Image 1 (cartoon, rainbow, N blue to C red):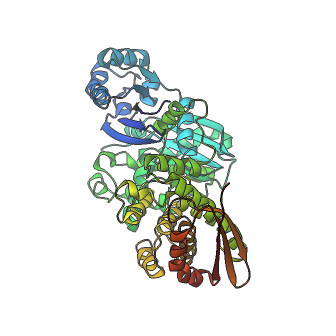
Image 2 (cartoon, rainbow, N blue to C red; image 1 turned 120 degrees about the vertical axis):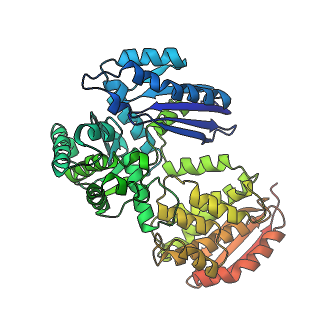
Image 3 (cartoon, rainbow, N blue to C red; image 1 turned 45 degrees about the vertical axis):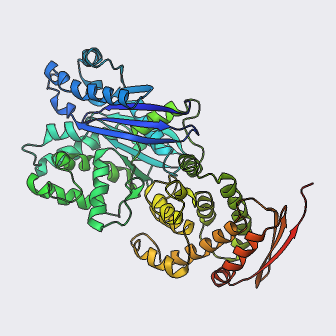
Length: 511
């Protein structure tokens, strides 16, 4: 996909119809610039004869026509409209597509169950750093289950039940009886029995897609007063899924609508959706439950963005590069040099430092991204960087790791770090403050070595003893600003690392 373009993806789902518009800038970085959602409940409109009748087909034409207009207003070059379970499973599927295409001028593609599962897989595998998992996508009219092994799609199945059509089948007056709940569980268990690979892959994390799991994540975050405003890659507490099933099943619809995090439009279908999810979770003997904010639409985008290689080899690296290109700050040579210097320093210090596994990833991430706040405003750019890193997803990192990186990238003093950490005490471990201080001072040291942003240090020779760290700077021009900054941060570094910092500088000509 060429740069400087916009892609519109319309998802005609069984519960909702959505439009998402992606923009690809001149550097090839992408971002969502517009998103819209309308409730349609197509699954519950299909009669017992399996037909979606004319009035129900026509009812969604205004939504699709409006989305087509939005794409024109946003000057979208490529629009892809896809339909999932409700239209796929309707007896008159071809007629539905014909009428919608005639009325809206959109070309509509009906996805098979396996295609829907594959796009959900692409959405997950490109945005969560995980090798083995079960992916569960509960839509309005279907549920896709996909097994990942070593990041590869091994098995998938699309079941013909979702939150909307299961509600329509088993609930009366928006309330579910004990017998109804038992019937839903039996339906799911019988479906699973025909696919033994689901139960033969125990102790895997379960990654959930779709409105049911996203709503579960919102309710969980509201209940715990979660400190980070991110839904993607949120992990539920052990037993929390079953807890919400029990709670919501016991509440009448009017009280269910008042549960914090549960939207009124989903309050009638949430319980059947959660019962499907919980039954799958128990049958698979899953180890934990993770919310994915990326799914089918993201998977379609990744395939359109790079058809030859839609799967990113390194989730974190791809996310870092995308953020760098979304927020160019005119100092790419500087941050890449800081990254090189930081990694060189880390390699010399890591062996005896007892830093946790993954620390090099944190330092690498922050070395490259510590200046993105400049794209907002140069003055106090670290403040902007901290907000951006904590709130603009860094795919490939957990929520705790995102917070750690946001504080490393903007580290100033130990006392300031302590105050900032208090806001995230539900996410951070007791030892994280010292980790942030150590890596923060190391980043400041690497940044000081290119303080002028002119790359004077051609070569850095690092020597460590039990009591000191010696830096020999071989420079192509006088590093006057670098030496001044090094002197200013020496005391902080020595306190954090317990090592005497010694600087030796020499200037030589490139020629």
